[in-house]
Image (cartoon, rainbow, N blue to C red; front, top):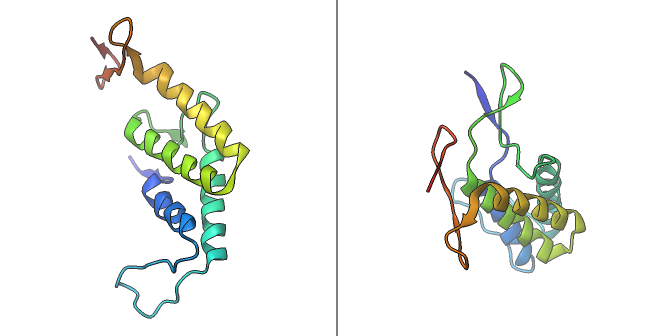
Length: 140
C-alpha cells in the first residue's frame, strides 16, 4: 500500500528556531556549501507557510493529518501521539514569535484531542498518559 507522508514537525521546528534568531544568519549543512543563506524574510515566509499547512491539516477533533493512503485518499489508521505533541510545540514556538491567533486555536484543538484520548487519571490528584495498544485497547 502506497502512503505519502504529508508533513513532519521535524521539517517545521528548524524553521521556527531560525525565525526566533532571525537577526543571526541561518546555518546550513555542508551538503550545499555554495548555496546562499536564506534571508530573514525568506525564513519568515517559510515558517508562515508551514504554520498555515499545519493549521489547515488539523481536523475538527484536533487530530493532525500526517499520512494519507494514496490508493484510497484516506487518512492512515495509525497515529503517532509523539509527533502530535511535537507539532503542537512547533505551533507554540511560531505563535510565541509571531502572535498568531489561528495557531492558538490549532494548539487548543490539538491539546483537547491529546487530553481526551491520551491523558487519564492515575489517581484522584494525578494525571498520566494512558498506554494504548495497537488494537485500541487501553491498558490500566
